[in-house]
Image 1: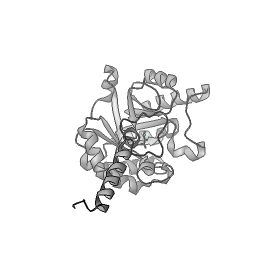
Image 2: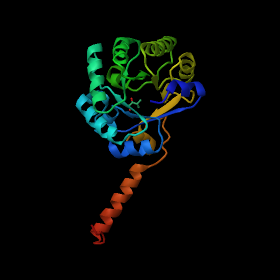
Image 3: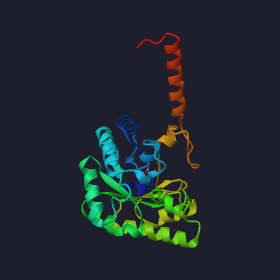
Image 4: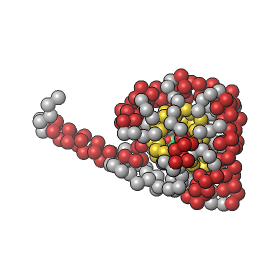
Length: 253
Ligand code: KIV
């Protein structure tokens, strides 16, 4: 495992993307990404659910296995789905199942409220990535994907979350849709790297859902993403070309 704290100290930015299948994971790994996350965002961009709250442990394990077959050098982190870490005992049991299928670290959503689970996981010797700010598994209670840290009390709670997960043994923390000023303050206040998503440029690293980055889920792209490719358009173009060639009698298969 790379020393992410050292990268933070050196000011070297950490790169992270999601993957849910063998070819994508292999392409990311071969491209030199530092961290590959089997995110529960797979529920939306791969399985077609409305949000991540329907993703099951079995689905996550299935996709983590596929990704693990591809990854040779990046750190492979797996997301623990909702209600698989309600108690510290359940959190450790779930984390071990991910390790058994090839994950090198796990992530769950929550800060100070989940210190007992995080300590249990790290004390079991399993590297842990925290996730605070907007928590997609709570989207139903929250009533949408809302920016975090606008009010003084929210900002203080987030700073406390960041300090709590560091103390509990996390090796890094994802900051999701946290206002940029606060993300910068958190980044300066803790020793572990912050990995931002929609949280400005001052985090120690950045993570994105790969489908958003490459334009593979054109029906919804978060506002903070600037896609680097339009893969959905390429697929549509290739399919249309195949259909046209076949109907014209020119496709040889
Ligand atoms: O599920 C996911 O993909 C995530 C990241 C985008 C941080 O949690």
